[in-house]
Image (tube, rainbow, N blue to C red; front, side, top):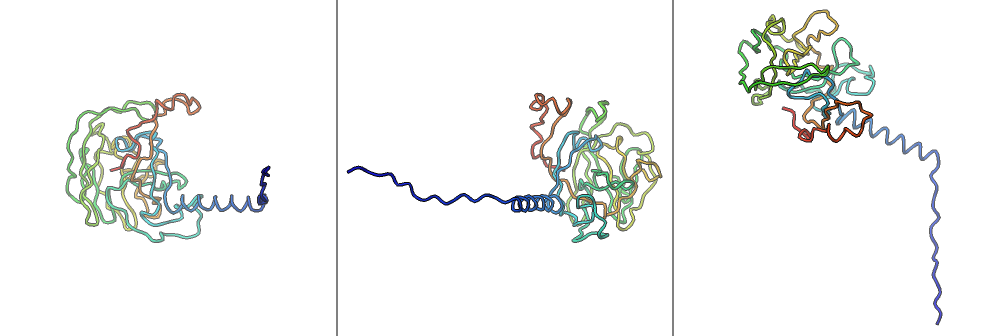
Length: 264
């Protein structure tokens, strides 16, 4: 008996309409906007002010929900409300991204050294917090190139910053290039309510809260509203010694040891 092929009926393929495509695209944009605004956002480190904790070319993931949300949590910083929603005070020792006090379109990343009511002073290159010198341990000589290809040559220390909110001390590395200059012999600052005091871990190559004047780079005290989020991890890192279009150098410029590197 001769068999016959069974063709079967196949369901007709439904074509997507232009309206549906636009709707899917809008949903995707909304999802990206929500994740970037409310959950995490990547940031690139372009300068050496946080060396040795963060290297130039690091890409950090910033937790947007750590301190609640202000208008600076959202793209384009819409001026629709003031203050913070679900606000939480940062902890001393946090590495945080925030908006520059003189130009809120610019993102800064520094370590939070002082909270409201804290007394901060630097004397002879040593950090004094609430009248007590913050302990540090010498780790040896350290050299690195900054974003201008300038050699930073100094001493590496492990600093133990007192914790806040019942947390233990925060041990982290700092770089000291000198004990001279204004940044190493400051007046005593008292952090006002609603603000924090930030410093770079590269203590002698950082424009931070030690500078309280009217200069274009002076940071001063940072309002809590300017906080964007906490940086707990380096996602990946590239040395970037060559222009980005020279892609054949990419594999040699990846810092493999900094993948998912925890920020302390």
